[in-house]
Image 1 (cartoon, rainbow, N blue to C red):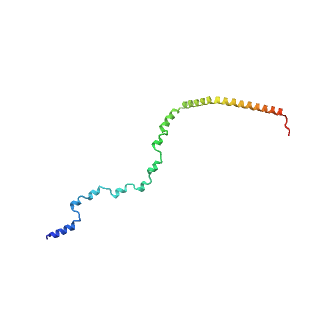
Image 2: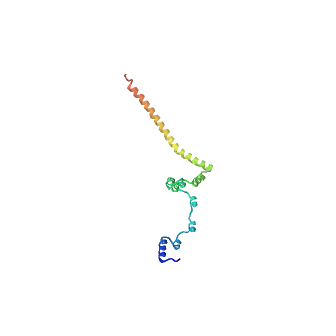
Image 3: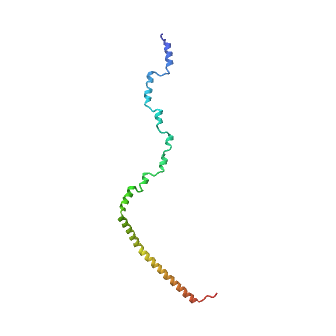
Length: 143
């Protein structure tokens, strides 16, 4: 059976909205899709709910940064200072120096305080003597 020209036109009008093999070749095949991620692959990754328990940028902003901590002593700094004063002889030397300096300061201070105490005591005795003499001069007060 042969198709007439009218049949061919009708058939072409009927098939025209559909893609041809050449046009379909431009689209993705099953083999192409196999290279992409599947639902099983995605299930291995974390969800928003999984990540919600971790810290956010705002949470981290509340903590100290390396720059904030630079002004504090490190373990190495403390170890170096400890080595400097770690022997018994060194500690005794430091203690002796401290006591000597304290004694240099305290001796003159103590002498000044003792002198002022004696001066005040002398003034109090003189005041008492003067008070007693004034009472004698004024005589007994009439009531």
